[in-house]
Image (cartoon, rainbow, N blue to C red; front, side):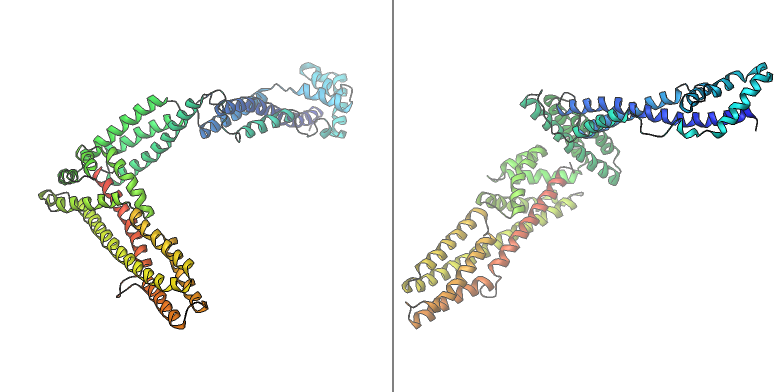
Amino acid sequence: MSDREKIRSKVVGLRRVRRVQIMLEYLMVGLFWGAIPAALFILATKLFILPFDNTTSYMIAGGLVLAGMVVFVVRGVLHRLSEISVANDIDVSLGTKERISSALSLDTGKRRKDAFVKALVADAAGTVEKLEMKQVYPWRLPRAWRIAVPALLIAAGLTFMPQLNWLVSDSDRAEAKVVQNEGEKLLKLAKQAEKKSVEEKDEQLKEASKEIEKSAEKFRKNSLKKKEALKELQRLTQKLESQAIERIPEGQRALMKELAEDLKAGGETKELGEALENMDFGKFSQQLEKMLMDMKSGKLSQQQLEFLKQLDKALNDSLGSDAAQMEGTEDLKKMLEDLQESIEQEQQLREAMQNALDKLEQDISEVNKQLQPGGMEQQSQQLQQLMQQMQQQMQQQGMVSQQSMQQMQQALEQAQQQIPQNQQMSQQQQQQASQAVEEALKNFQQGQDGQQSMQDTNQQMQENRQNMAGQMSAGQQKMSGGT
């Protein structure tokens, strides 16, 4: 290797090291200039100045940081770094008094043959072989990290800041939240529609799911005002309902029309029938919503029980009509038949529960007759109050709470334990009172005449009502074409 090549190999190696250091410095500067606008952007979304949801704003902020880094790294790559400048740095850092830079500068063209230049290059080559080149560009963190890291931490910290909305009125803030929530609901609906379109190979439904998804993104990004959003919702709803009606088989539509007429004949089911007749599935769903919620929790008021009674009659009439025999009604008819069976089961269970309550009331009355003369008025009063509470629950909810049943059982068991300890009762009175309480407990825990206990009947009512809610919900979906 010639003297000139020895010098250049050292200089080129150092230039590569310096190039990497320059790129790292520019990277830190880019991180700073990317983090600053990212932080400002996140702050603007937190203040509702810019209409973006959290996910979108974080993605854009991340993009700003990345863009800043890429731009400055490119600048680092394009930064001019000549061999002469590196040689100058060697001279300055290692004190070689411009021997290296002079050798590189003069060792060109015709001057290479000059004896003085040859001697200078030979001296420089010998010098670089002895020097510790790592001292020229020692590795250390770029100084720009001192401003880059705090800027990045500020941007990251702002992501945890709650929505402040100082510059937005309460009404605008509430509207934005409503629109955003509707967007989330629409996205779920779009996914359901897309899944169903694949299962049924329905191109029309597939196109509708894409349209819903586009609208959902507008809602989520708050690019629509509440008034515009409501119009968009109404348009989509009408379009979906129209398409859903078109997909309903003719026989099923005929059965729905027949059911609508039968529902209108009942006082409690009239509005439901009118909504079904007009194919107003939004109103139809609204009419059933509270009942479905109450059913799932096991509660049914007297009005709702009357509704079920009238619904049972309407189902019976419509299932016996000519429309029920038409082609395409099989699935809906099966759902309606299952629902009718559950309603009839509800009536039977309710009657059984009421009979059990009436029997328990007789038992409690007999127990009270035995307890009161023996100075156990407090126990008697507690049993009477619990009995009234259970009857009241039956009237208001159509069933008795599990808590009330547990309290009644505990009260009877406590009375049973306290009777032998009562000094005011004669042995005969204790025996009669114990028999009355034992009979009441037996009927309460095991039922009477081989029938189910109250607890079992109550549990069965709960399960049947939840099952009814599922059947009504499925029937609602089937009648509305799955929308």
